[in-house]
Length: 252
Image (cartoon, rainbow, N blue to C red; front, side, top):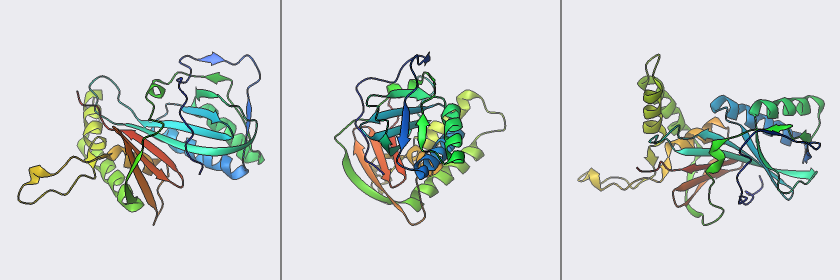
């Protein structure tokens, strides 16, 4: 896994548009990279079908997806973004930065894997994705912990069960938002409370939604560990399979 490329200063394109020139072709480092990217996109589509942001910096392709994002003013669910980086061997297209429908990305990847090709042609039409306006910091990350992947998986699975138990059969949008915020916005990793004075326990730094994203995107492995870094309100989970960048819920 390559390190994360720097964030560009400009957001992804804000409106759908057709490319007038031939779409760039990005040649991935090998066929396995195409298989991995297809698996990543498939998992992302099941979690939140909100598009994939593709960025090219030098010979690195960064693919971003949004797993969690607030759905309106007052929604306290954290922002949780997934990131995979893949090396390119040809077709260097510095500055490419656009969001594409996951269905379009998957269609091209399925064709690549079925034919054994490693050449990815960007879809002809990009789309709007409001979540791209929220970008993690480029630097200033501080290592704070190394967590067992099994611990993160437990947090994710417990949260999924908690949500299933908390919601009735036909919940309204407001109830769903409140339940998601309560479960995935919960902060973990704070100091253990003193039994004599539980109120003295400090606030955690890791939103449960980060564990949910890492679990759902397939970034956790049996016996594996994940490095945790923080920068302001952001938390980054880094593992061999990819990254999760999560912003703690904003206090109103």
